[in-house]
Length: 112
Length: 208
Image 1: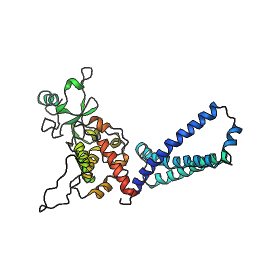
Image 2 (image 1 turned 30 degrees about the vertical axis):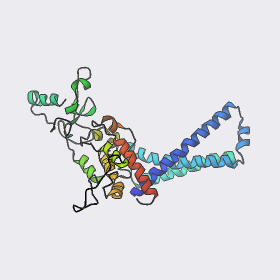
Image 3 (image 1 turned 120 degrees about the vertical axis):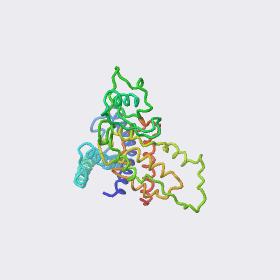
Image 4 (image 1 turned 90 degrees about the vertical axis):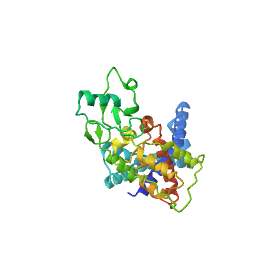
């Protein structure tokens, strides 16, 4: 992997961290509101189903996670397990695809 | 501390190998691990580091040991070369002196990092070096940073390329052990953060 790509990965991880900082705050505030307000599952679904605003927000959240986590794991795998090179990066691309699929499945589960 | 080691070698065990030169905190030769912490021994008072009337003196971490307290510094200085830690000016001997305003922003940043004596205390204290042996380390990156901010230097983009990526500044986890232990009070962490910013700018503008 070229130095340019490695540098871009760092920029992507910083940018996704900034997005995550916002998303996590909004997500936690929403969870606290839903639980404290005593909303039922049906009432929550009534708010999320068909709401393009929630769809956009949680899709952005998932995207930020998909970018951020594998880049962080790249360093963890190298420094913790001494796993480097193309095999690690391909495994992480596959992992990114899995969390993208699982995350979007959850998002669509409350939108559709 | 250095006096203690010298006493041991002169009186108790003449076979003890250790390294020193200036004895006044200028040359960076006498760094060792004292009670688990990397220090310059010539400027370290025993009463500041002794614990329970005991002291353990060991060679620097993260460097191969040649013998006793003497480490092989080659990889430490080879990494300075890899980080393009040499000045390359734009002017020739026929040009006038460059005039750099001491109060300019760039010069102040250079000033903050320029007094490195190459003792390798930061390199020894760095956990990233321990985890990733090809990491250039705090001293080499700090040196690169002082050259990147030197307005007379002509090698900025090549140097940024040399210090970017997995073996370079992007592996720093900002643990700040280098800053904590630097005997000269330099903050390599700040320089490394500066390199990350410069590289981000360069890569987003397509110059890297």
